[in-house]
Structure formats: structure tokens, C-alpha cells
Length: 177
Image (tube, rainbow, N blue to C red; front, side, top):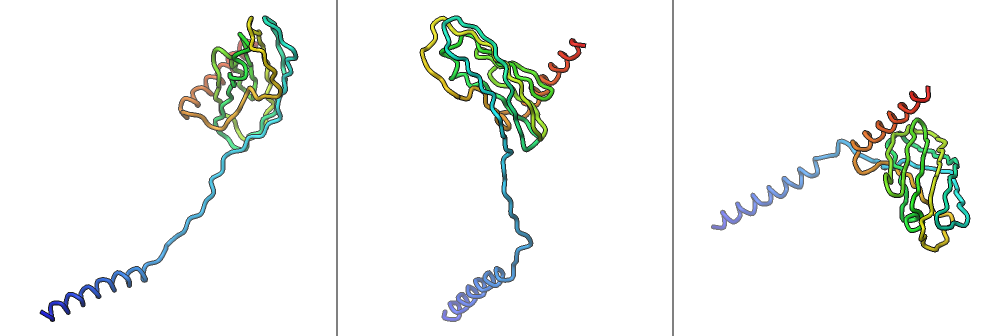
């Protein structure tokens, strides 16, 4: 019986020792390091001062902004409706950037996705508005109403949207000729 116990202890010791030796004999074949960074967006803002507004007032203003993107990719420009919805019955923003021209509106299309190559762009922004008949009384100063972000929810849909915008712009150019 002692021989069986001694044999069991000996086998256990050999097994554990083999595992330890196996660990000591192994080695790494490679290492990895990386840092994921997001593309950067820099802007020089277009500033629209609508002054004192009254019910039913209409207006149109045009300003330029500058947009610099650090990487090729899909970008989304979005109209922030919460800044506008209680004051304006109509608010349209027509944007021209690179080969794209599109319109965002308070009660319609609120965002547009397009493909931009790395670089700096002049962005022409035209707003047209009608103040509602019963606007909420408030004062707004230098609040962003247009935002740009890299990427979007669905890559395929974004590419389709961008291509549609490019075609729309190209169709408009053909009509001008």
C-alpha cells in the first residue's frame, strides 16, 4: 500500500514538474503595441446674428465657415433643431462644400452625410427663416446650430447619401450649362 501511495505522489510530482518545466521552456514570438486615434475636425465658425426678431419676420443671411478634416472619410452635418424649434416656423440651411450642395431644414431633413478627403474646405452657409406667429420669448447668443461629426450610424447608407448628393450637385451643374 505504501508503494501505491509513493507511486501516486511520485507521478503527481512528475506531472506538476512537467507543467512547470513546460511553462519555463515556452517563450513569446511577438508583441503588439498600438494607439487608436480619431480623425480631428477643426472649424472657423460662421456667425449669424439675426438681431431682434418679431412674429412673422422673414430673412436670409449667408456666411462662410472653414472646415479642416484630418482624414478621408464620411462626415455628417446636422442641424440642431432644439435651438430653433420654438421660435421659427421655417428654418432652412443650404450648405455648399466641395462638390456638394444640400439643404437641411427644421421640419424636414435634419442631417446630411458626405465623403470628404483630408483637407481644408470653405463652407458656404445660407440660412432662410420665418419667425413663427407665436414665438417663444428667449435670448440666444452664440449657440451652435450646425454640427459636423466624423462617421455616422450606417456606413452603407452614408455612402449612398453622399453619392446622391454628389449626383444632385452634378445634375445642377449640367442644368446651368
